[in-house]
Amino acid sequence: MQHATQVRLTREILAHLDARTTAQAADIMYHATSAYDSPQRLQLEKQLLFRKYPLLMGLSGQLAGPGDYLTDSFSGIPIIVVRDGEGTVRAFLNVCRHRGARLVEGCGHAGRAFNCPYHGWSYSLQGKLMGIPDRKSFAGMDKDGRGLTELPATERDGLIWVIPDPGQDRTLDVDAFLGGMAPELASYGLANYHHHETRILRRKLNWKIVIDTFLEPYHFGVLHADTVGPIFVPNLCLFEAFGPHLRETLPRRTIEGLRGTPEAEWDLIPHSALVYVLFPNTVLVMQIDHVETWRIFPAADKVDECVMYLDFFIPEPAETESAKQHWDRNMELTIRTVNDEDFPIGEGIQAGFASKAQTEIVFGRNEPALAHFERSVNEAVAVGQ
Ligand code: FES
Image (cartoon, rainbow, N blue to C red):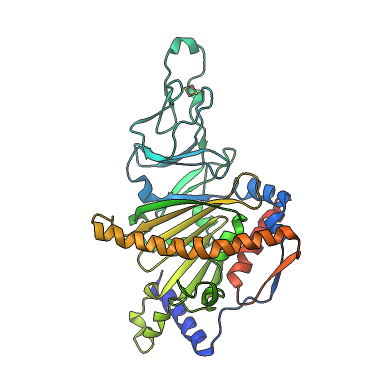
């Protein structure tokens, strides 16, 4: 983040602390509960948000060298993302062109080719069909036309993006997509971070409730009184929109220590958590010394279930036992706070929607990031109707 931006945000936070205020939305927002429990709404979200939008697939460090790959099928489309022999990140449907078997699972290193586990067809890292056992039995088949189906993909400033729809234009303009946020993300040097751990979590709540839980600190002093509540200033956040994306700034209590120090020396990062929503389904959190990404998907066709990847990235590989324990403790605090405190509340909310106790909920003016995210989903879905 540019230093001038850090100073501007820090000044705003200190002014809010003095005035006992927080960033405010223009109005209260009333939000229909059908956004969270309508099957028709979920189908629109799946068709539009999880097919047509660039989705974050990971950070560059997860594909460190040629042949490294990862797979992802939670969007409903089976995807391989691989770094080819020339260093370019490519994405393909994870579907063999013979009879459709899945080529690889999980993540790993493919060497120079993907070999189908069913009958042994092989594909180069650029998706070209290379080898066919008993070739003569396929004489006359257009071999060049049976390469892997490629998806629009790009790597930019340490972030890997894929559009899951093979019918989309091949060009993927991340700078335009990010609505002005790209230079700020670039400033973090995300390409230099190392992947520490991935957890896959499944919970019984709509995918958007997971994102909602990151988007206001109004609840910190109550729900998180014994975890992160003592670390952060409750009910104080800053909010800035970048098209449908957003940045929410959550100040740590230590920010008071910047008072009386020269602005030229101010560093906001150690005194905050910076929460970015990379619309539609990723929450990227810049913590003091590490980065978390939460990538959240609806589970199958269920309005009230979701599945998510929590990925933990660190500045240096954890090569000693003490370093590993340090990062494991960080991971556990994150899990304990969100999985053990936020998500049970979210599951209760989801069950409450099913009871039809109310048809709308309300976002206060002190929850501007939350209102922006839900309004952005409303608008994106309305465009597709
Ligand atoms: S399905 Fe892949 S080789 Fe037959």
